[in-house]
Amino acid sequence: MASNQKLNCWQFMGCGRGVGAQSPCPAAVDKICDGVNGGANAGRVCWCVAGTFCFGRTQGDFAQKMDVCFECEFFERVKEEEGPRFQLLKLAEGVLDVSGLHARISHLEALMRIREDVHSHFDLEQALKDITAQAKRVTNARRSLVFLVRGDPPELRGEFAMRGERVEVAMPMDENSSVGFCALHNRTVNLRDAYEKQQTVAGQPRFNTQFDQRCRCKTESLLAVPIRDSHERVIGVITAANSSKGFFSSDDQWFLQEYATEVALAIEKSRFLEQSLFAARLTSIGETAAGLSHCIKNIAHALRGSAFVIKRGIELNHMGNVKAAWEILDRHVEKLAELSLDILAFDPDRALEAETASLNETVNHVVKLLTEEAETRTIKLETNLGRGLDKCWFDPRVVYRCLINLIINAFDACFPQAGTVTVSTARTEDGEVMIAVSDTGKGMDERKKAEVFKLFKTTKAKHGFGIGLPTVMDLVKKHNGRIELESAPGKGSTFAIFIPDSTVQS
Image (cartoon, rainbow, N blue to C red; front, side, top):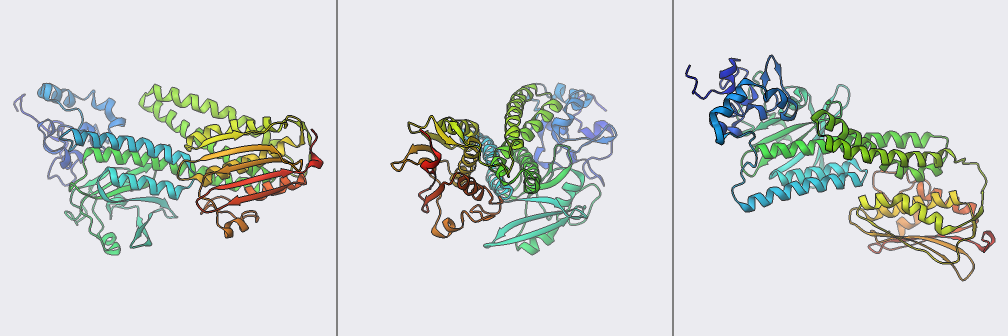
């Protein structure tokens, strides 16, 4: 065979898994890369195709196998043969002009924003909605769904809206569907024509038409990417279907893989918080500690996320990412230690321990503690502190916990739009000390206002135990004080705590 003949990888390796083989290599069927470096399908850019079979074993994705590929004799041969025309990766698929390039940049910016959005709240259902909505937009797909591994035996379950109704779909983790194949083999599936192959072929996915029949739709092109946890175990699949281009490019595949990582982070965060909330409900330290749980949840997510980035950075030798994540990890470990001391020191049966202290200093301490979370949520946290409050008679720990509960609830009320939360202090004309927390959030109607202080009632949809505000009420009563609420739909809310003059010394 002439030395200058352009060979595809399966020809060079002699593996027998080329185009037309009974069990072809993924590079042999990747039509998106057809023609790159003069090869058939991805035959001469095989290093960027996940799941290729080389050196007697199935390889991972580009990041996992690039060290092996860059030492491969075939890789060196393609580089030498192509010279200045050599393409390392198939990037910017379909970008033909400046406007296309600008669109691709906007997609990258959107990916960065979704990370900030997902990190700023704790609702997994909302996180998945945000991620799939953006994945659909970025890949120009007609729909995007997330299927999560659930049950015993495990199966893939997803949920989506169809004509205003919620539809649940379950798929087994087997080779009888492309989504099941993706999860079973931990491998990305990219089908240009979902109905092209209806017979199961060894090593190749097939599209299960029952999904279309049930959902009364037609799937043409399909991209499915496995969602992996930090141990590389498949915990779900994210899909995009029916590209406006007629196929999903390698760029689309890269973006969906990035969104799969964001889903994995959101799931790990949700699981950890569920465990934390369950433990908090059973703990003997009392309901007041729940006021600090929001801070702990935020810190726990930062620790988990930082650890995930550090692990990935070490694996991929991205030491810059490791250094940045380590600084975040170190800062939040210190914050967690401070909060732990506050929690462990709390005794639910402890009598009020009032002392002469500065009310404004206590307020500033809480505000400083929550400033970082406010910035993460794009919320402006302000203070408006009155005079003559340097020597007040109150229990600093009780007021501290009340403020944490009220400020975190104010943050939640501002979601999903950015807003302003203001903490005010003053001495009233009646000699009372007043502490108020105001927000510019969505506000409450009369029914929600009536329920807001009932134990285990909550104005937050589908998450939270609702014990924060009742705890505030209980702690205010220990000061023989009272709490007032002013709120209206669309006009925000103000919770004001009043401590009577019998507990105040000037």
